[in-house]
Figure (spheres, rainbow, N blue to C red):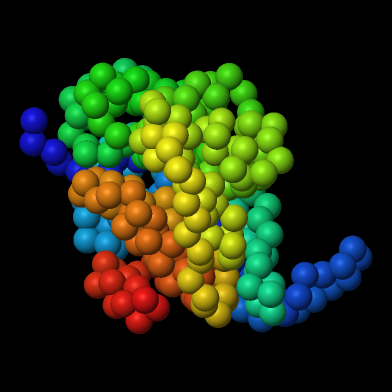
Amino acid sequence: MEKRWDVLGFGAIAVDDLYYVERYPQPDEKVPIIRKSRQGGGNTATALVTVARLGMQAAYSGVLGDDELSSFSTKELEREGVDTSLIFHKPGANPFLAIVLVDVTQGKRSIAFSGAGVTEPEAGQITEEIINSARVLFVDHQATGIGLHAAHLAKKNRIPIVGDFEGQLHPRLLELTDLTDHLIIGVDFARRLTGKGTIPEMLHVLAHAGRACCVITEGEKGCWYAELGGEIYHFPAYPVKVADTTGCGDVFHGAYAAAISRDWKIEPAIRLATAAAGMKAQHPGGRSGIPTLQAVKEFIEEHR
């Protein structure tokens, strides 16, 4: 079957309202806002924008309404070239709304968000034909119901599944984690998932012969990964001047998924993802600094 998309994603789409301050306020303290901006966000949506910026075909599937935030989210995806034909409309549905407070001195951010009105597609809306139209399925922890449905169809059709998970452990999320071929998670979630204290111990649990690759990320320390339960490798983060870490993890996931969709080997996929995330970190907001494939290649060559 001819593939319509390189990466098809189910999961979080958000509107990020970013507020930049010189430092985080202490309790009962006021600090001035230096500047503010609104950008599209969300784990899966930003990962798919990364796929598109890298020159590949991406599609997002979710449920939105007729409100201002839904319209903004859809237009942002379309502006980036992400296919929105699988967005279903339902009155009262809307994306996540995130208030992102960015400490410009430290380059760190804190997020408060609302998921009121967030809705998943129904299983009957996502057919085997739709799933089989993609080279890679991308899922995150915010769409475990439809994610499980899509993952089972992907398994049936031997379509690789890339997963981005965090948050609270529950049966559906654990089942979806087990189905994921390329599991990319932060060290804190890996610790909760495995109950282990060190990254090698975590990888010994999560990386096994039935999983193509498991990657554990740890911000500026880089990431550790193992293929098919084999040897553990470390890939360091590129040294960059960090302006804002918002969206860095999503960019990493998206770049990795893009590489896998084109049958790249794991180590080059990790290199691409690490470089893209590092380049994004030099820019404010979750999407403004996402690079093109040519820009990433030049960055990697410069840092070789």
